[in-house]
Length: 317
Image 1 (cartoon, helix red, strand yellow):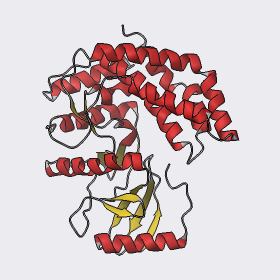
Image 2: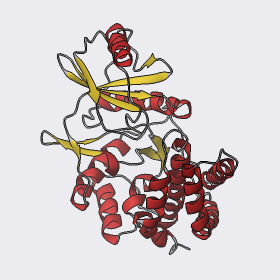
Image 3: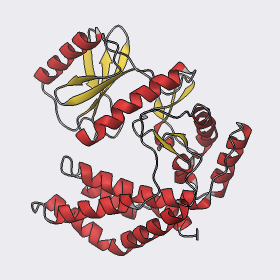
Image 4: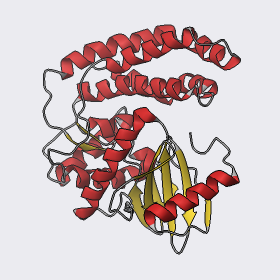
């Protein structure tokens, strides 16, 4: 969502005051920082620069809080590319402002530059995370189910009974237009999930969207935004490029080179293609009441990047 709601001077003044009270940082300026999908993001300028993330969405706040403890764990074990959390005066990893959960980080002056050429570095970095997997972290574990499709269909029904607006009508028209494709993916998700449930072993710490959060700054590489960190198979990180032979081979070779005893499984890659198809649709509908997502949903179906992933998943039997 970024900072799509224009904030008043009074709001910024209160935010500066809260940052000082909770972190002891005297902010000279707070400016929008267009990073991340959830919540508000700000660049805090003081003696040093900081990245401030504010999560107002109640359904997502627990994940955000949990992710901060994982970042702290990774940093404590030598990982220097996930961002560093700034603790409060009371040594907490997060604080609160109005109804938002706040996370404050060291500022990284970089850009998201994901390309095919960055995949080798990205996969190497992910392997360093996999090597630090340990049980007991308070984060979710992946489940092979068709819950993502069921959740989306419930949202679709809710939208049908929502107040009639041009934005709602536009979303409903697009969903009806692609109804057969959606039904196909739901059926395949249910089938593939059943195959995956026959073996639910070998989970690691996974990011979920490492490529979308691969940053380069000051000659260094970073994987940021660990909000969706989860115990899951590596396919959760590999699926988005898994439709390409070269990417699957590169991922497997990188696992082997880092002594991680795992090889990508086609049915798990297919599961994440279908699962994430519905995950993104559900995210769009969740945010839609706050910010019109009709164009984004139309582009999702029409622009093609998800189609190649589904076409690959359809080859798995």
